Each structure stands twice: as C-alpha cells, then as structure tokens.
Image (cartoon, rainbow, N blue to C red; front, top):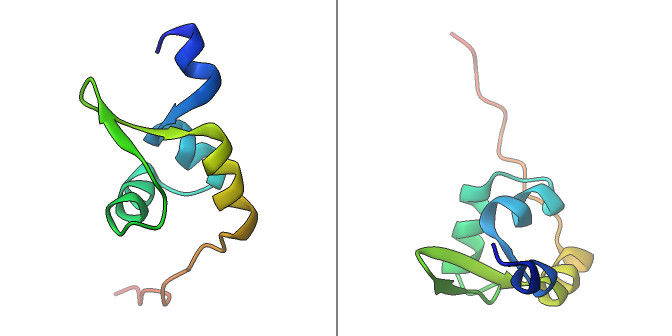
Length: 69
C-alpha cells in the first residue's frame, strides 16, 4: 500500500493480525456490517482508527471444539 494510505487504512490481513483472528473472519465481520470498510483496488480497506475502536469492544467468539475422529 502507499505510505500515506498505510497510516490511515489497513487491509484485511493487517486487521486480522491486530485483532488476533483470521482475515476471513474479518471479511465476515465487514460483510455483516459490524465493521465499516470499503473496496479499493481489489482490496477491502478499513480505517485504522475505526479498527481500534472496534478492537476495544470486540470479543472473539470461539466455536465449539471439534471432535477428532
């Protein structure tokens, strides 16, 4: 990403790293409307300050443990 964009916006990969979850989970949160983002150049971008606000209230949901065969 461009230097100035990097200061103000993060992509799904970086958002996932900051939240401690998979980027696919971030995409699902965005698509559910819980975290505002927009597409630019084929990537989802999230405002860094909005991500930090979201992070302060976000509690990751851990699914039920899977049974091993």
